[in-house]
Image (cartoon, rainbow, N blue to C red; front, side, top):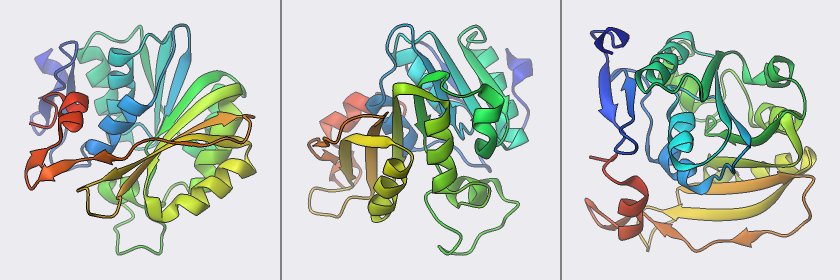
Length: 248
């Protein structure tokens, strides 16, 4: 398997099913948001799931480890990230369970067809073009800022590829929550479940996990807060339970 890893890359142990992931330390590596989303999202037996903007493939790999879905697909526009994701799939011998497709989120329904997925996940860029300085050619900037796709692009294509009553799962920033709900409802993705993530119990939330249902009825459940730290450098028990040893 060593020939799947380039000299400048590293292999991180995901501490679940023996799975590992190939990452480049100077590029955008997965963070807590992706791991929390993989715990929040559910893929039932026989279901097919699509991850929009999969990066190096962390969500399809973790979802496959934690769920009994039939098949998982990751869509990624950046060639280097898509290549690392494919090699991670091969490294874990998951090529029969996970596909990595290089392509644009804005074209997802053309690539895969309409109403073909049971579940869609996405950890999309959090910041608009108005938030901070960024290098449009930098992998980290593309992952963090809406340079190549907007929130509306994500919602539109999610709705297009989802089957009726299919589920979608997002992780985002609370300061855009009104915009997120407006965009979801515009495309008939009814918010059904939400959980706010707080760095400390006495701080403002810095992440939000959202589940939506295509064509669902209007009823939102707000789950108990998820607190990350008990004290500086000390994770809460729930975070340890979710993360396992991935954070080490």
